[in-house]
Image 1 (cartoon, rainbow, N blue to C red):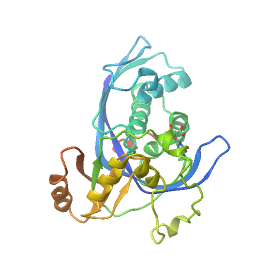
Image 2 (tube, protein in one colour; image 1 turned 120 degrees about the vertical axis):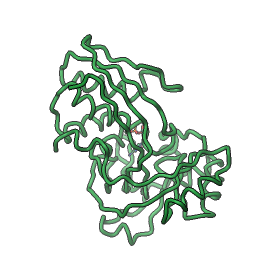
Image 3 (cartoon, rainbow, N blue to C red; image 1 turned 90 degrees about the vertical axis):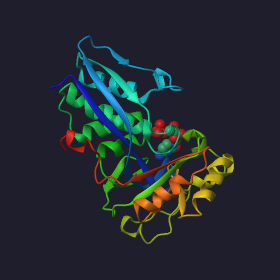
Image 4 (cartoon, protein in one colour; image 1 turned 90 degrees about the horizontal axis):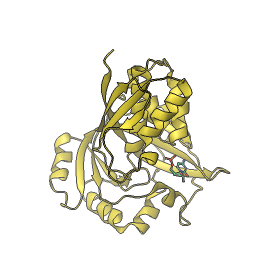
Length: 280
Ligand code: C5P
């Protein structure tokens, strides 16, 4: 097998996100639909025989100790006992602190790729358990398809959604997730819904009102996008999105986006591009 693997790490959007409670350890109990979209970071991994785990280049603003790709590789190396190492290069495309899962997806793609590169033979459920140690959103990307998500992000059930086009708008504000979850204004008692009901339920992102309050730029961006189609925040922001019936409708909106923000036309992905890299 080749000693170099290149792989994408796709983004997600949260079609809704309800906070239904809080665990004793401070983590929040959620209900959400996570959807994969075709906007990706690019990761290159090169196996090395000396056992070292290194970055090919620094990611601006991300210390190596916080870099989830490094932490994913070290965790897998430690758990598997392999004597092999890797050099990891991340070509960052996705906005950071954007609520579209870039860092979590990078970590998931590293786990999937190293399981292959180091020929470890771990199964999907084993990688998902490791992923959860890195972050609550990581198991979703290892699950590899659109999901109704509960718990803190580790209980996943597949959902079938019609293909769709979206505009994802990044307002160039980085929102720290812990700050939003710990905000006194956050409501944490949305009544739970049953999965088959979600289409009929009136859903929202419970984190959105707090982010709009603390980050007025996000509020402005939502009001701008709402001129064209109902807009909502993804995750803990700052990215927002709106659905459009046709690609050309989405592109038309992207073309009008004010220069201070970044807008991208994306399509839903039927499955994660690396889903078949690991056995169930
Ligand atoms: O798991 P992850 O590192 O992505 O989460 C970042 C932070 O977001 C956590 O430290 C926690 O403060 C908050 N969080 C939460 N409940 C969740 C997910 C994240 O409170 N279900």
